Image 1 (tube, one colour):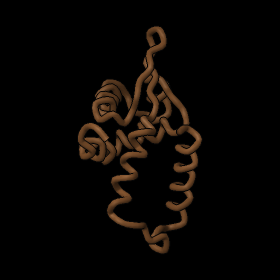
Image 2 (tube, one colour):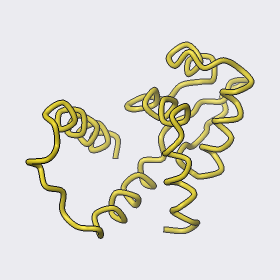
Image 3 (cartoon, one colour):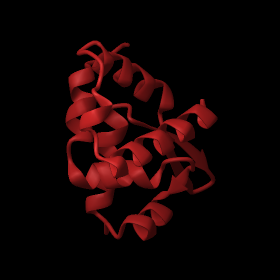
Length: 113
């Protein structure tokens, strides 16, 4: 993986950026759609999107005047591989609600990849 993974993990750790990333699971959105989905107003949203772009967590596509954002699923796979090096997760310690959310997210990424 090129670049510093720590920058990606730091970007993930911010609650506002995490909310933006969650809004992009399974779909691409433009800034207005992200603002509507998250309730994060400008200019704060643009600042957070810049951090996500710089950390490569999102990719962009321009269509006329609109810029569309989507998750960089390849980077998320790389980050998951880094985390897996720290050892297996004991499922017994994971609450059921978290398990459901994780398996749904993995299924979404599998469909996208």
